[in-house]
Image (cartoon, rainbow, N blue to C red; front, side):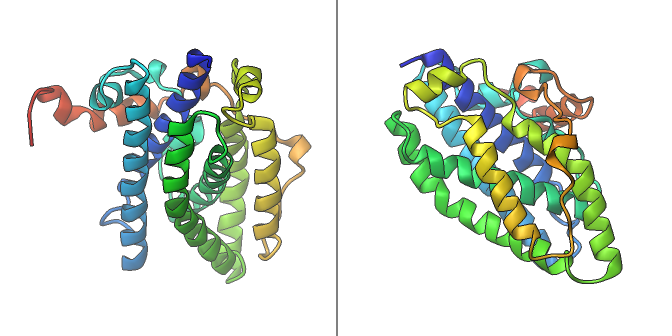
Length: 251
């Protein structure tokens, strides 16, 4: 098994979950409804827990401890897609990001339940149930607000147009793509993106929202290669503040 290919896959998945988990946690106490405050906080906790499990797999492959990996790297060492590091903005943007990202992640983990790397396949089976809740939540609110008032439809449509190019960055090609496919570790980003586009279209067809022509969208790449927006490093500085004061502290 190509360990470099496997580690690259695990790092980008773990970093996605960690960064979006922290972004979602920023809604704690700030949600537009108490229900949404609790929902985003709960999903944030799930994502950070999932990132920890993925970092544990990396540790078993010879990488450093999860806390060290999560809290001591700089922005250039992270492999998350740029979509997840963008500021929360208004609720409409966070909801659309949640919908686009979690749909992709649920499909990714579903594919990984058949991975030839058994520890990852076993983790995918466990995570799948949590992600079903996340996509159910996102679909419910997108359908509701995407067919409600003129203002809600307009705001979600604008957020969709802003987020889609970044969402395509989720599927940024991996230098190890063929190795992952050949070895049965993962079915590949192209297949995942195809499944995602069909699912996104299926949900949005039940709303007044519309998708632009996919061919006219230019994907925002770079995150998988450590090239990030100006928003990531300040978030990492905030995330690692306590760990940086005393990395040896026990709680």
